[in-house]
Image (tube, rainbow, N blue to C red; front, side):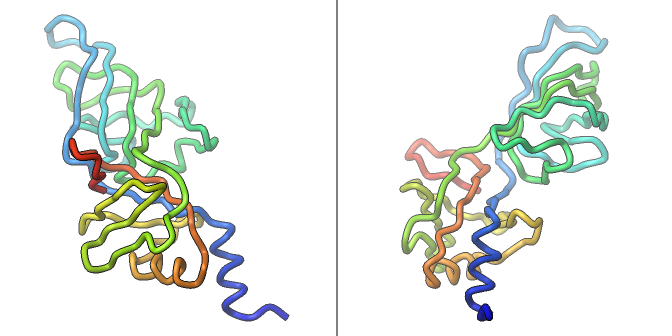
Amino acid sequence: MMGARTARRLLLALSAALLLAACPTVDLSDFGPGGSGDRDGTAIGPIAGFGGIRVAGTEFADNASVAVVDDRGRGIASLREGMSVTVLGTIGGNFLTGAMTEVAIEREVRGPVDDNGVALDNAAIRVLGQTVLATPAASIVNAFGDEIALSTLKGMLDDGFRPGLEVHGAVEDNGVVHA
């Protein structure tokens, strides 16, 4: 019979954690000459909401057939608020609405949390040697979609389990990621 601790480890071993947070800067680029009509464009930044996908102030219409570029095979239903993405498509002249043709999931770092890689006093996490500072808006979400606390992540490390994280955020000049 499997003990509770072993069952917990097994369950956690089957999940990968995602660190999601809002990125403080966004960029709209690749627009044609001025005018008020729709134009091909790119929106880059964190997902700020759904009902479609809202990125960089533009609400892109929900399109189940949109291509999602992701090396993990995720689809449009796997996107979460705070994930950094690049959206290709058509953006209206008012920049408030658009139609997406492709969404690429962007990340700053992905890999296992370092041994002793969580510091609760300053909300710091080390992933593959990269320092990540978790902002109050940051959330850690396991593969089942359940949000877990930073203290839970530390407990996992203390129990000998090194979960993998995918970090979305902004990188400072010194290399520190703010998520």
